[in-house]
Length: 307
Image (cartoon, rainbow, N blue to C red; front, side, top):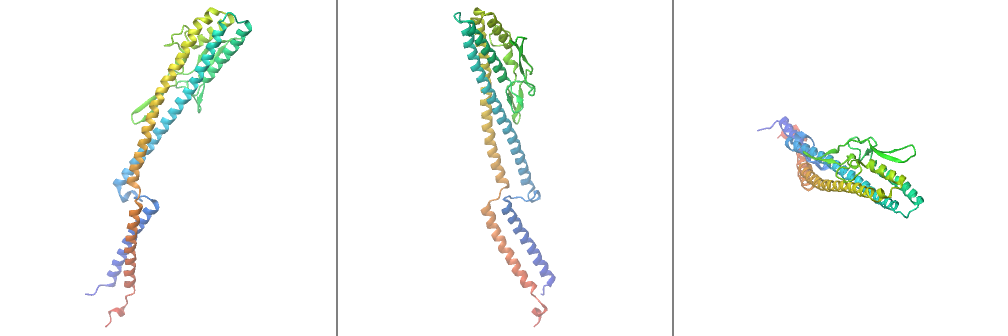
């Protein structure tokens, strides 16, 4: 039975297009290193890849938030460490001023340095992380602390312009932490055991006692208040340290999760190069065989059917 030329041509063209498409697809996978070139290749796998990419992006966002929180806490820790050192120096100066053998010149020098120390404490409490004040509560763009002074330039108190709230941050799905920011905790005497009602009152009492050379108060209540307010700074620093440890643990988990997600994504979308190359070689052989068959078909003329 004679097969029509058109049937042979159609068969060749179908084989040619099929082998070409397969080889081109594998070649594209090798060049892109991806299993899928478009979602229609495998809709289920494409859906998994999209979901994994979304999870990776979300995990990276949480990781950035956690790292930002760790840096925030470390900035606060450094500030409170500096304040603690300044408070110790103030204690030494107050105790020196309470010494009855000191002359007025020593006490005057002590007062100048103590007021400078008060200014340094306030400057440190006004530390910024980026463009945000770290002890301003939720009002991070407003300078939180301000020394009050009288006409003579003496310190008379301390004003707090922030809020009494902390900053909530989400670090994982359904997991949030509050970054410490409530500067009012430094101002009030709650849990400090101090006689002065606030840090500003303590500053005022120290300067007043120095002006009046009240050695009994300098050597008694004011020394106790110095210790109480310094302990308050230390206690808050300890709380921040505990939060830092939690955030660092969360960061470690976040990084492990990122590794797992990227590995899962690689399994779903990346090409096994060795396997794909072997497949390409086989498809290339099929393609060449198809071309060879086509060459013979195309060379057929009416003379091939004459006896």
